[in-house]
Length: 205
Image (cartoon, rainbow, N blue to C red; front, side, top):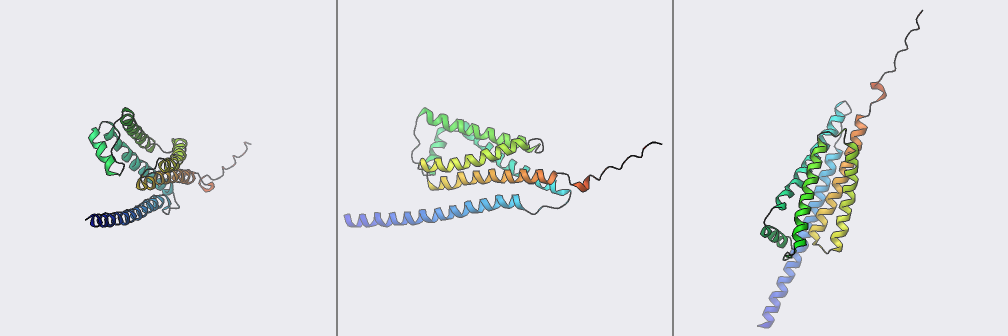
C-alpha cells in the first residue's frame, strides 16, 4: 500500500514538473511575442513626407494611452476586498497572503501609484511636442525600473512567471518610448529645403 502511494506521488510530481516546464516555455514565447509587437509598433516604415511627424506622433500617442489605460485599472485594487487579493495571491502561486497591516498598505498604495502613473501617461499623450523632455525622463526611468524589477524579483524568489513577464516588458516599453520620442524629434526637424534662403533686398537708390 505504501509503495503504491509513493509511486502515485512520484508520478504526480513528475507530471507537475513537466507541466511547469511547458508553461514556462509558453510564457517565454508570449513575452518574446509582446516584445516583438512593441518593437514593430516603433519601427514600422515611416513616410518620407510631411506625414512622417504625424505618423510617429500617432504611434507614440497610441502606445502611451494603451499603457496608461492598463495602469489605471490598478484603481480597482485600491478599494478591492481583501478576499479578492487573497484569491489572486494564491492563484499566481504565491501561497497564502500574509494578513498584516503593512501588506494591505503596500498593496493598496502601490496600486494607487500605478494608477497615478497611468493618468500621467494619458496627460502627456495630449501634447507630446511640449512634453518631450518629460517623456525622455519617463522613458529612461521606466527602462531602469524594469531592470530593477527583474533583480528584485530574483532576490525575492518570486515565481518565474512573475519575473519574466513584469520586468522585461516594462523595460521594453521604456525603450520603445525613448525610440519614438527620438524619431518624433527627428521627423519634426525642419529640412533645409523647407526654408529657402531669403532673397537679398535691393539697395535703395
